[in-house]
Length: 199
Figure (cartoon, rainbow, N blue to C red):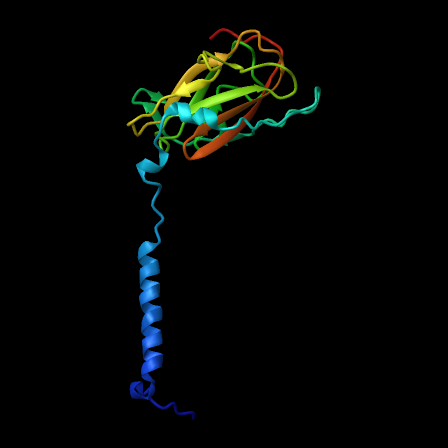
């Protein structure tokens, strides 16, 4: 049987004890400064016009190339209002989605719903154009800057923007870029030939 002598604290030198104490204090301070909380509101506030300085970095496609459409995502079970549930799916990534397509492509004149997750409450802008041609912003109504502007909110509900794919939008591949103060998100949609059915 192996016997282990009890630990004798008095055998540790003063220098060793001081060094260990310094390490423990440092670890405690580090733990105090570490946080997993979301950014403070000040981190995502500012003027909507400041977002226009963000570069528009949408991909370029050769005419006739396959459109790399953004896949549909499950959005979740939030609510826009007490009377109106949000759609269960849309194209995009947090916190910005577009919903309204049946999965076979978008049609000129078809209604489009932009959805913003309640975790992001500051303003954002949405710009876009055709990736495989010369077509411009596919969403209407657009602002004078040829973009969609969505104001800030104090609500804890999903925000929505109701519009449509512009009449006369040529079939092709289109990119949308949403810019907020703490994110940039891109969505690629395909506009296909045809006209939307009755509402």
